[in-house]
Image: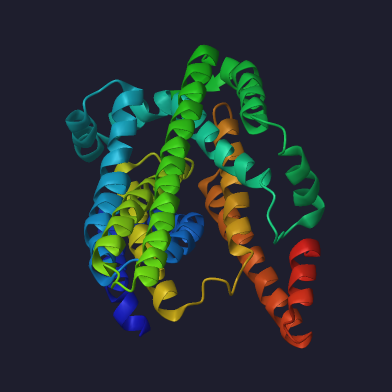
Length: 381
């Protein structure tokens, strides 16, 4: 079962790591391995969300998502999008960006390094908004309850996450941006650049979030209409047109999944810039990670184990928050990629360990609903 589900991922991993060694030596191998783990860590909650929706779809739409969807996710967001980011931020053409990455690494590295303040500000704000909205949301199951419970109460204030993000952006522009790290170890005033790029990141998040909410509302409306049609057909003694209703609902599910997948893969791409500026290594690492996310989605659907490790989503979002902070700090200071790559893995590992402890505790207590609720409200590491 595992080999059947993850077979293509294993094959892509082997090819990707070999290509990394040929391209960048063992240092390239290490970077690609870190990026792969980072992408899987950041996108685990993506796989969980995808699986929860995918299991409601019929076999045809599941196949569409796992074929067309993976082309969009791997080749679109993980391969093309990093080129677009570099091209826009460095003010060069996409073809020129790829050509420089392959033929003139020194010049490409210089362009990317000089553009790093805008990339870091844009990505840092996007990731920060994901983290803040997760942190301020009131949820039944809490991992670090002593932090999450009071913040959930503060989250009742409208637009609080946007206000905090703007305050962080202003602080970053005035402190890190005023002495941004540049190529060759020099520093320059990039406060205006940091401010504009950060606002662009914030706007991008609001657009993506708005689209996700729109498709989610459409999905809920489709499910309500489907339920009403079924009830009416039952009352009239008529057969329900399951194919038509399932097809319509599945179409909105597919659109919703693609928007969600794009937003989740976006944070992976942005987070990758905190690890490396080499677009080839970035594409290899993110492509490998994306394959595992897709395989994991299928595995979760087939095994039905979506709720086994309930704190993994928390750990992934704390990793996103850590990456946001690191990106903003790297506007001025250099941070070793080993710290950046390992931090997310550590947070995911802690959340997994907490989930295992919780499951053992619930099993010892008999797994009753009262124990479940107690564990969800007062749990912590």
